Image (tube, rainbow, N blue to C red; front, side):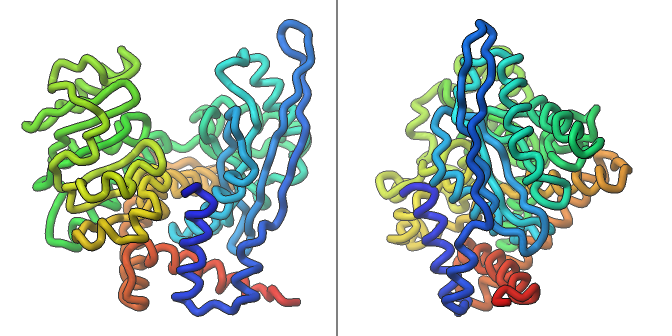
Length: 413
C-alpha cells in the first residue's frame, strides 16, 4: 500500500475515533496550496535542461508549514501530497507550532555537477521565494538534499528578503544550523524507546536490539543505545548484514561503514542474509531504512517484542490491518512519533535563529528529551481515552490538535 493510501486510512480511522464533523474532516484533508514550477538551467556543457519543482503546503492552522525538499528522479505529486499531510500530523504529535508541507524537484542529483545543483536550487528558490518564509513555510533537507542545499536556498531567499536564517532548517552550523541536529532523529528514537520500555518496567540496558538500516538514523540510534548499555546484536544496510550475539562493537562498525561505504566485510561479527534480519530473535526491532518492509509475508515470523519505527511507514498497513503483529502481542511505536526527533530539533534551530541566540548541545539534547518524554505521555493518554493502539493514539492526538486549532481560528467563516 503506498504512502498516500496508508496516511489517508490512518486519518480516517482517527477521525472516526474522535467523532469529527464530516465537513471538518474533509477540509482537514484538502491541501492549503499546491505549487508547481518549471526550473530551466544552463548545464555545464552549455545546453539547457528543464526540471519540474513541487511544493505542497498542506495546513497552517497551528503555525508555519514545515517539511523537506527532496531531489529525486521520481518526485511524484501524489507522494509529495501524502508526505505533506503526514507532516501536519507529525508536527502536531510532537507538539511544535507548525503545519505540514513537502516539496521536491524531479531530477537525479547524482547526474548533476555541484554547480548545476546550485543553479537548480537557486532557480527553484527564485520561483517560490514569495510562497515560503520564516512565518509561512520553512523547508528542510530530505532525500538527495543536504545542509549545502539549504545554504543556497538561504542565500537566494535573502537576496529578496534580507538575511533570514530561519527560512530553512538543517543548515550548516556556520550559517545558523543547530548543534545536535545531525544526531537528532536517532537520539529521538533512543528517548522514545526509553519511554516505551519504562512503561513495561524494562530499560535499554537489559534488551537486545536489531537495527535495519545504518544510515544517519540507524547508526546514531545504534551508537546511543550502545552507550546506554543496550546490546545491538544485528545490523543491516544496503551492502549486507552482520550479527554478533555477544553484541556488536558499534564504534568500530561505524568507522568500518564510513571507510568501506557500508557494513559489508566487518570482521567483528558474522555476515548473514539481510533478508532474514527482521526475523532475528531479539527484544527490540528498529527498522530505520525503507517503508513497507514489515508486511503480511514476514509479520508472522517476527520474534521481537517491540518494534520502534525509525523509518517512515516501515510496517505495511495490511500487516497492521489483519493484526498479525498485535495478535502476537508485539508492541509497535509508530513512526509519526518515534522518528519526530529530527523535526523537533529543526524547530529548536528555527527558534534559535529567530532569537539570534544559539544553544549549546547539552541544552538541545535536554529539550529534545523533554519533548519526546512528554509526547509519549500524551500518546498514552489518547490510547486510554479511545482504547486503541499506539499508532491510533498518536494519530488521534495529532488530528485532535489540528482540528482544535482549526475550529478555534474559525474555519467556516
